[in-house]
Length: 356
Image (cartoon, rainbow, N blue to C red; front, side, top):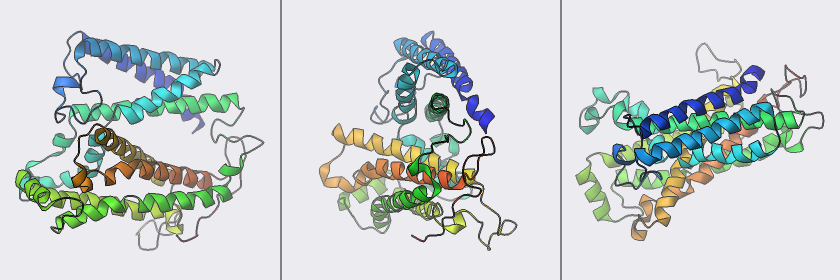
């Protein structure tokens, strides 16, 4: 783990140089520019960068990526506080600004589309390639770059504090990061993360039943006419979100640390922390991005106030994402136990058997 963290700066620099090369190639006429006319965005309403063109957009992308490369190199060398002050906005831009709600749609629909070919009706005509087009895959690439820069910044911060590169702990410690403290505020974060998406779930389940909750009857009729089965797809997304809420409870329940008895071959074994932390962090990121997309479009006047059910629930998703991210962090702090590298911490991670 320590080796991976210490190499984050080099990985971030390599990603940045590679993306700078892509920007230059697009500016010189190479195909594959992921924004502008080549992006199947609906009239440029979703992507914040929909107005970019390969030239001069490619040059701007190359310049941005070179700034990321220089910042990553400075983080590796540990020179001053300026690289840290630059790194976090760069990481935030790559993770939260460049992507849009289509990233969440791709992740959410992948399980369904993986078996779509075996289904009758319109879903049988839709494949993974329809949601994972290159502009959306490019968003994943940008999120990867932002995550690498953030990891490099964390490493630099730990070096400045003389903290362990593996666990981030110092001899002084920090009260809010102790297992007991994380268990307390982690329960609050989980409660918020579970409750917030239910507003969205209620509207989509109602629509699938023909109940115009938050919208007009004409809205439902027109939606079904334009895209048959769309409200069933909405109910699927709602159910997907609700099941995610159930899994979120595992971050504060015993079955989130020890596999339950009904799981053959795994019963009684400890759940690897990353098995919960990685998916929770990914979902926290994509729902935050999707929520920010809806907020931006709402502020731009893209929605009708009378049809609030179609957009208002999604505007609360950044709260969901932040709460889920905090819950994942609390889970990680509780499960990390004694550090094998520096020896700090409790011998065993704090147990989280308190029910919600």
